[in-house]
Image 1 (cartoon, rainbow, N blue to C red):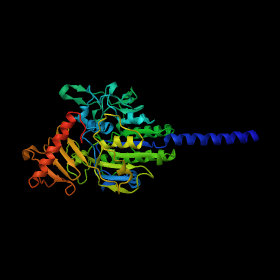
Image 2: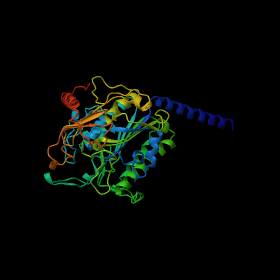
Image 3: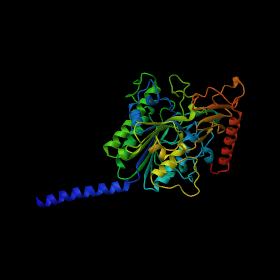
Image 4: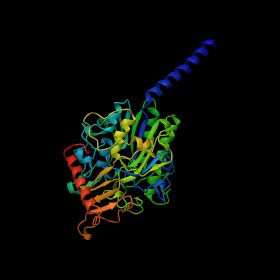
Length: 450
């Protein structure tokens, strides 16, 4: 009996020691989850004003953290948007700014680029990519060769599943599902995609709570074709798009539940955002709220997306800020929060916005600038904190209306970009046009923008 008591006490002491050890390993290194949706609009959440969809879990995330009302992606379509998010650079620096990568494409994100997962790995993080990649289909471009320890997902968009490309007489294979660098199967029931990635993410969280981890959870939905499981089909009362949104909301709830069950929710940063604006020209599709434009356009509706940051006890709950920020800021910010440093001569087009996250009510606003590259890779617009200028428009402008006129908008007063004041603001128009061209030239020359 005496021996059993000693064994019991030793077991308690050992468990406590292991817990302390794990806690010390995590100190200053919060877990990080980027919950990334596909083609979800600025107005597709009830916490951003949507009257149709019920998104209680995402709304709660916003209530528990910071909601940004001016958060941008750095591109209006999938591939360049994702490249910028993970690299902290405009996709033009990576030669990925034109269109997207297709199943027949031979190019991808250069493995020599230093990405967010690689920088976090240097800080002792486990790294995982679950869901959609879309930065290269060849083996050398897959996540497992881009700083991720684990990849479970698909290499490109769900609309490329068995798609026939008439212009080159090519039919893509059924959507391949990868585990690391191995194709597990070709073809997947797309109704199950959100459930599939959610289950994998929950399993990953439960298996990796003994070290800091970075989980990049990139859902396929609500990219066309829209899908939802039987559990959610028809439940929104709006459309299949609404059903997909509500299933994504459920997914976030499952992620947060897993974190709570493992006791690591307070040491985890969750970032919720979308890769670009919504598809709005389909029956009961996405919603850009008060913004003009949609996916693939350089109007605000193409790049301004939901941006929610939650870190219990660190980011003040219930915070809302109109301070502009972008996906380019995520890499330098997370590296700073994780206690790391950017390598010497590393070029980033983003800023460290950790003070905005931690002190949203009092942090000094940093200068903000954003270049808007179109789907074809051409530079079409530029904004700072107050103004936005458009110099060209390939998509989102009807040629029947004539040549696109240079257009200047006061974004703070005209979020819908409806009142062109270029004629009455000649000096500002010239300044913005010149700054826009200079910044683009810095990128062409691979120089830092200052």
